[in-house]
Length: 496
Image (cartoon, rainbow, N blue to C red; front, side, top):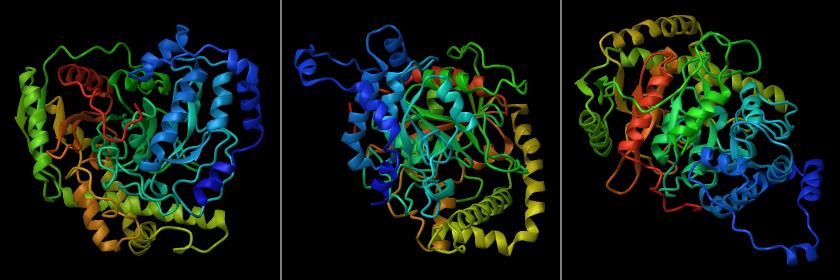
């Protein structure tokens, strides 16, 4: 009922405009010739087809809506459908590098005309009156949003099983989760509903679902692409916006379309497959000492071997990080954010903080922050100083190769937000034990879909560099994509 009511909120003037723009008389329909709508491997090709007149934005949006309807009962990756608004947008004048290409916006940022519910039962459904700064870049690129993709409450966990919307399922095995927090985005892209979707990453939330769903996901360097939240800037900006994509070239083009261009970094420039050979540090062991699943170890070792075969120097490497200390400081900072979110929901709903408005996982994190509030300043100081320690690892290395997660995708329910808090914490820390250090350091990092478990589950390989190494990672990704293509491999739940 909740999902239907959210979609119903979007009926009205936008729907009226779209219906008027798309309607034909029965006589016109009968006389119209049958037109085969071209399909495309990625968003770059789709945009080129639209620009060349091979197809139209409206045809591609309509085809994507049909794909969404076909897989959504199995995947459950959409929180709010804005199909009528998308039809209206597609029927208008669009410009930009992805003019007319359909996509989804993660339900953590505002897209004008749609609600932002942040995976929470406690936030109202008011429609956003303007775009988030990152979303405005996508709108300026001509991207047409079909709606909001699923996320856990406030993006606070590595699964996508919010109590507000139910679990999103992995197209490769619907008994398993897609990861999080950009789980809806990755599931919809993996299922070939859209060629790319907006994603964000505060502790692994682009790379984790990219890995578990077999798509490409690059976490940009801090401040390379716009990111903003209501209120004052945090002491340490760990979250970034970008996308999960089928192809590397879509990720590159989307990156260019959204660059902040404020002088902090040079613009991305021309990106071609890597030609120089790299010194790659191979670091498969979790710094936290948690176990690594044998399937993930095998897949990561295979990625290292591929790099050797391509001529790169691969060096066994142990990351000189006190994993326990970093995890504790990061988790406390994360928990403080959960506490602020709980206060926001309470203010919005007019209700006191409790399980009726926020999930048990969020409450558990908020409670941890409240108990340890005096330690938060020291945790922030430690995290701010960590950037220098992280970048020192690259004095003799170009890139570090490691797993993205401790295992392939786990069964639905194993990281559900209403599970026992202590048990859930152990499971999350075991699964998501590799990605947070790059958020703290503000560094570029990516998941490349190079591996598969014996049962057919995707396993990404994570390549990480310094802050500002986004271009280098894209060049490496193009080389890896050419050496071991992945886009033709489709999951059992696929719209194409």
